[in-house]
Image (cartoon, rainbow, N blue to C red; front, side, top):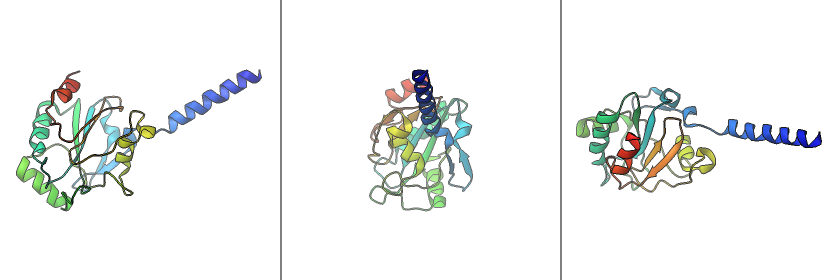
Length: 179
């Protein structure tokens, strides 16, 4: 009897811990236009989250991100850009300036969120989730530079972390999209 009670309490404790672990679907962020964007609306889609910057040597990756969006984006896949000014002041603009830059220079139509911090003491909660195995259940990571990509499967699980220099059209990403 005592053993049964201990097992039951242990199972309840484990269930409680898993129920408390945040999901990517728990987050709501602001778009560059100041509107709410709920990750809960993305259930069933593959998600690529990428931190962006307008004055970075890798800024031309916007071209490939847009191509990827035009080819795969829609019901099954979404790209979400998070401008961040964490690396050598390479994203100094306001949300409006970033929106204009992305639209004018790269024709960006995939969702772009309000500028955030992707590292440090003021790290945004979405990036806390992305970079902490304790929260995401997959892997600890550090955002190395602008244009690091996080791939999340259609069940909301973080499944891959792609280094900044790897282009959005790399076979590793395309194979993941086509799986």
